[in-house]
Length: 278
Ligand code: AMP
Ligand code: MN
Ligand code: MN
Ligand code: MN
Image 1: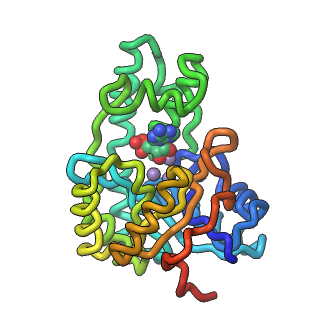
Image 2: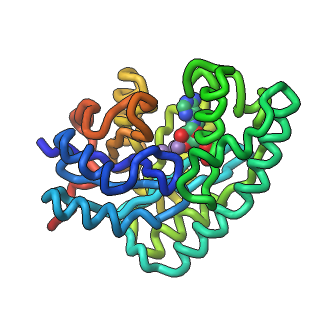
């Protein structure tokens, strides 16, 4: 059976490793088909592709686009697109803009609760000045000793209702799917279990996602529990969505799942890679 990992991050967004180092880690983890999916950014793809080729690992292009839908943030993974497409590049650039201003507001909130200089502190972890994210703040907050790890940070800071949370307007769902499809790619809902949708909201969301041309759903991801693998496999079947699998690996010792290490997709779903040929 193929080991496919279609979701991870390099230091071009909020991961800790360079694209080539991730490729090496994926290959060592037994991955046969791999995609780097940095947040709102495709600058790591050429390095990823070259490294994958030199390791004899199959590679497809990837990105994870931040979307605001019904006043919530959802993430849409794009796969197998032409990264030279200009509308996609411009859309991503627009989506990235505003992160610095947001980061300064986050830092001001953190200063008010006794964590000064968090903007500069977060920047130390940033590989791409265009892409300062909550993850970078989380790593700095751990460094200050205020929390023991990144996951504790995301319980006490940086989330709605806690210090350091600044609401942000990301791309529209229609635009994100449009950019991916316009570049010949496939749009996939990232980690659907993370959004706290009730049944009705999930139905409204997935119906709209499909109507706009979305095609896939992550079923096996580092963000899901084992129960959720089964639950979202059923959802994928019910909505006629292709199933995807990806670790969402960010950094050694920080992420739930390592590259290639998750269980295979449950039986009965159609994998998003079912018709990919090399
Ligand atoms: P941003 O795009 O700046 O809002 O940052 C979002 C990123 O924060 C996600 O891609 C994750 O890497 C990280 N993140 C969000 N929630 C959590 C969590 N509960 N535990 C660990 N990382 C998280
Ligand atoms: Mn991330
Ligand atoms: Mn995500
Ligand atoms: Mn991700």
